[in-house]
Image (cartoon, rainbow, N blue to C red; front, side):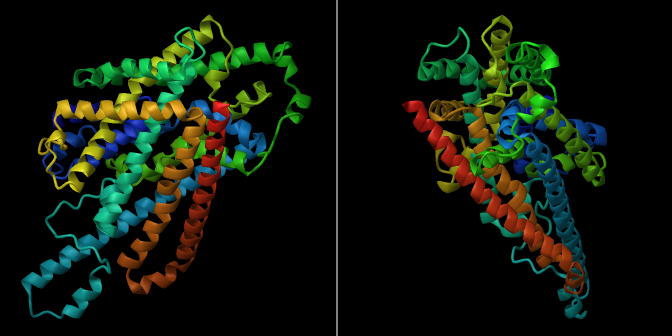
Length: 504
C-alpha cells in the first residue's frame, strides 16, 4: 500500500480537484515520518517553482466546486458577491501568512533549544539561567532527534498542542473529506437525474452510481482515475461556455442585446436574508479554501520563502475567475439559481452529454478522495483499539493492506452514497462544509495557533512590540468563531428544510 500511495501522490498535482490533490498531499505528509531525510535528493528534483505552485493552487480552487459559484452569486447578490468574495480571499491570504509565521516561530525556537541543549551538554557548569531564558514556554516537549518536520497542519498541531490537537485536526480533515465525497456523489446524482441514465428513483440511481465508482476503487485503477480527472479543468471551462450560450438562448430571446442597464437593475445586489448570506459564505469558503494545505504547498516549493508570493498570485486569479463566473452566469440566469449550474441547463443532446461526461469525471475523482480519507480513518481506528484489529491490516505502510484498504474505501463510498440520497443537492452540502470544516481550519485555527506561538515561542521582551498584531489576531479569532458558528447553524437549518420539503 505504501508504494501504491506514493505513486498517487506523485500524480496528485495533475488532479482536477483541489480536494483530491490536497487531501492526498495531507495524508502523504502526515504519514511521512521516517523517510524525510532519505528522500531529500529525490524530492528536490520534483520541487515546484512559484509559477507551478500558483498554477496548482488555482487548480485547487477552480474545480468541481466552482460549479456552485453561480449559486453563491445568486444567493449573495451581485454587488455583495463581488465585495464579499474579495474580503474572503484577503482573509484566506492573511491566514496563510499567520500559519507560515507561526511555523517560523516554532522552527526558530527549536533551533535555539537544540543549541541550548548542546551548550548545556558541553559545559554543565555554565549559567543555566541564560539557557532557560532561551527555551520556549511550550508545554509540549519534542525530543531532539525525533521527527520534528512541520510539513502538515496535523504535525504543527502535534508540536504545539500535543496529540489531542493533532487528533482534532485529523478529525476535521476526515470530516471534510467524507463531506466532499457526499457532495460529489450528490453532484453525480444531480447531473444524471436530468438525463436518460436516471431510473426515476434517487435511491436506485445511487446504487448504480456506487457500481460505477467501484472499479475506480481498485488499486490498479488509481492511475487511470487520476488521468481521467486531469480532464476536469477543460470540462469545467467547456461547461461554463455551454451554460452561457444556452442561458442566453433560453433566458433572453433577444440574445446579448437584451442584457442592458435595465436588466442589471432588476437583479438582486444583496443577500435576501441571513440564510442566503450563509449559503454564499459557505460556497465561497469551500472553493477558496487553500489555508489548510499551506504547509503542504510550501513544502513542495523550490524556494519556500516565496509561498506568500504564490498565494497572492493564485488567489488574485481565483478572485477574477470567481467574479466572472458568478456575476456573468447570474446575469444570464436572472430568474435565480437554486442548485449547481449544470443542473439548471435545459434538456438536450449537448447539455445531457455534458452532464454524463461531468458525472464520469466526478466518479473518477471520488476514489482519489477516498484514499486519504480511508487511510486516516484506518489510522485513527487502529489508535483507538490499540492496534489490535487485524481487519485493518496493521503494520504495512500507512496501516492497511491493499485488500483491506479497498474494503474501507468501498464501505466509505457506500455510506456516503446513502447520505447523499438524503441531502438536498451539491450546493447545500458544499456550503455547509465551507461554513463548518473549512471555516474552522481557515479562519479559527490560524489566528489561534499564531497567538499560542507568540506566547510560547516569542521572547518576552518582544511581545509588547507585537501588541497590535496580537489584538488583530484576537479580533480575527473571535470573528472566525462567530462567523463559523452562525453560518454553520443557518446553513445546516437550510439544508434540513430542503430535505423536509423534498419529502413532501
